Length: 212
Ligand SMILES: C[S@@+](CC[C@H](N)C(=O)[O-])C[C@H]1O[C@@H](n2cnc3c(N)ncnc32)[C@H](O)[C@@H]1O
Image (cartoon, rainbow, N blue to C red; front, side, top):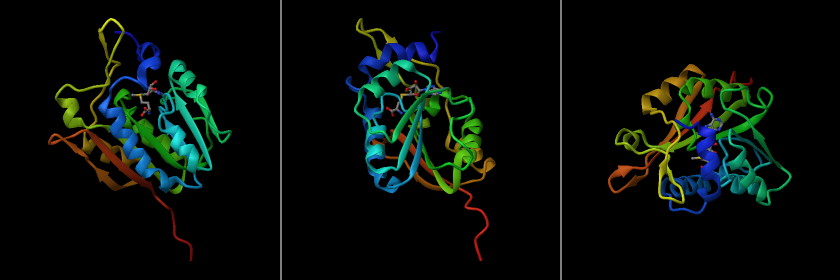
């Protein structure tokens, strides 16, 4: 099976343009959340072509986007992003290139299905978030995954390609979050034809002891 990077290298050029209901649903969710990120330092996991980065950059104080695919990042870099945006090629399983307690928000859109162990992501998010910071995840809903849906694209010859995908149920998110000191604060399951397309969750890092 081709690697995730090989699949996204082939997908990058068409990713933003071909019909993709999951990509579009996630864009709507993130556009809606955007005002909550005003003036904050944000880390975006699996930023890809910067579909969401552009909107974050309009309101956030700084945005660090990380991704494993140079081809997806090349599309992102070709956009006119402001100087407050930094994009780095890095695998989510490696230590993220930012200091402890250095960001207010971490977002992950349509990337965690490619990560086998959620615990690694939540532990690293807990490290880089300031006390009281938020982790937002927006992923293809596990009910759809269990019916066979997954990230998938068709090449110019009409052949279908999928990177390796893992199913994370609601309980898996809650367990990983609690193990790293997050509270589950918000959950959305926007319905489409009677079935949720996305599982959107907002987790808050323990704010620490309250001041006298
Ligand atoms: C479906 S795209 C989503 C991109 C973007 N977040 C969006 O919503 O349009 C998934 C992205 O995750 C990246 N990705 C997959 N596995 C990764 C990993 N282990 N570490 C970092 N990025 C990864 C891919 O390169 C790709 O850009």
